[in-house]
Length: 487
Image 1: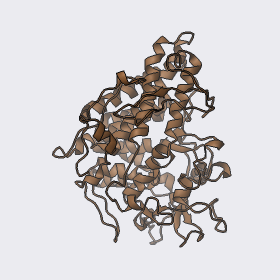
Image 2: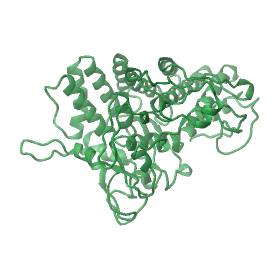
Image 3: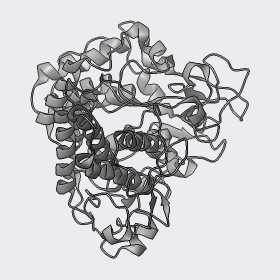
Image 4: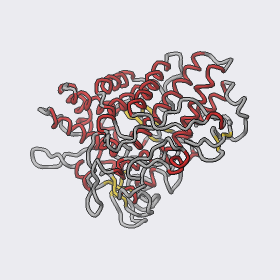
């Protein structure tokens, strides 16, 4: 990340979220500052915040898993078994699921420590304090939401007979064993209320006196956009629409791209639609085994089938590709959807050549190095379209739906209402956000089954594998923590 400082605080074993003595804040270049003086200066605070962004780059988080695993668990991605990676997730095997519990709580603890320390820091302007606080609140809310998406049910589809609630809410930083609390799982509603509070407070703290907005860092538009997403999952459609509108109106970061720029936007170092994006420096390349590029494609460049790069572990299913080619004109000819251009034939260097996703194809030609859009402008139109459709505003929903359809090269939808309108919005959501980490979570929040082609078995929404298992070591160490059903 930019502007790195050194900061290292050794933390004793935190029974709930940490295993053994570990580095709480670990930022390059390495050096040590003891825990008493670590967060007492503006430089140390800034270093700590940069350390949280570094956590988000983890393979367990946005480096791969929160982007690729939702496609493998659901019906968008098919494992090729060229390296063996993601094959178990594609088959929905027991325990083959998300594993970001510990990494998320490490980052949450870092955010808590920053928030705890801020009031005591001298020689730091209030505007700078507000900017830091806004970022820490945004990231804490974001990570609690990611924990909820993986380990708990959404409020409107909770299976109360088997649900164990939400996740533990930790709001104070831990630096030694005396501060450890064996928290149980908070209620689903309480966790959502906490996420709402963090994101609303983040929005309030992002002011014109803060630094210029950048998709590389948390920003006001990102907080509004994330609150729209959270509200959609909660079934709070009024706020889902409101905050999508706020994010779209802001215009400070993220620009909706025209059809002619759709492909080139994915070839840019920074996606111009990104409202919040995880960015990597050259020395932070995840590498050939687990980067998104190697996960999705064997290609090192579009159209170059002579040189093999990655493994292409997860490729689009026939059902997804068929969906891109499902509309025809009056002559029966398939209408070209520009989004289909993001899928092309890979190399035979790892085995049978497959049609592969090329949304992540190496930033500026640097193989296996991609910045990761977490929130794009296009999602805001889809969030608002769905929210408006579910609250009876057919005209508004159609307008937003058609922003996405016409940009793709499809004719504007007309005369849709009710279930037909919602189904079309969900279809366009699938096609627009495919291989960006949304599909499994969208099916889950709607209480829908996952349909897979034989020989892989489909799984129903009531199957316990819709939730990830909590780490066994956490269950063993904390009697107040209840494991999800089935594990």
